[in-house]
Image (cartoon, rainbow, N blue to C red; front, side):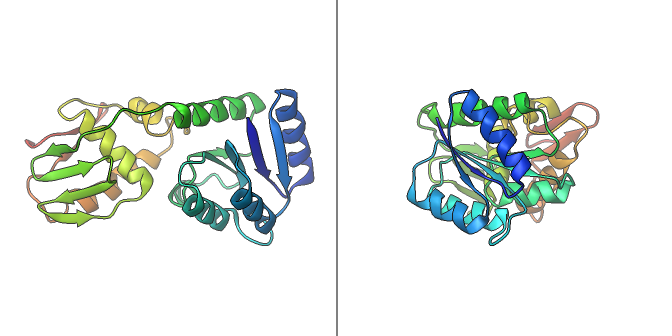
Length: 226
């Protein structure tokens, strides 16, 4: 597997480079955002490891431009910023996963394997999902309610798709962490609550009936009745 590592801290870059090459990965290094973006746009990589705070061009902007160039390449973002808002900005920029420094190298390896496995698994064609007047088309990446288009981020789309595929069933936070975030966050994080709130504002606000319901202490369920 060929990896692009974009990291400006020499000690961190050297540590990751040594560990990854010892695992038989091929690793290209870039110490700033501009060089990282150039390499990502001119070379095929199986995965990108991208620091969020970079000289020249921020990791968030590199992530956005890489995602526009190659929508499918897995991106793991590294950062010393562990606040919920920082995680959301990284995910909304197009990152698939988020690892807060300091981290265990074994965890980074597990995250890489999970990201690459998701890309290599060929998904079966997916039919549109419907509940009441809400429609989600997985193939076209389109969501409508009552005929009105709804704009969602990639993570919001993935969350809504999972909830719709399990409509009528209570899905726990652990379910969402595993299937939407690939265990990217500990169960104490409020990222899920934040994204559920985002979805409610876009999918339920101004529409009836309400479709996203919270069962305190249990999880969330999509259904038409209260």
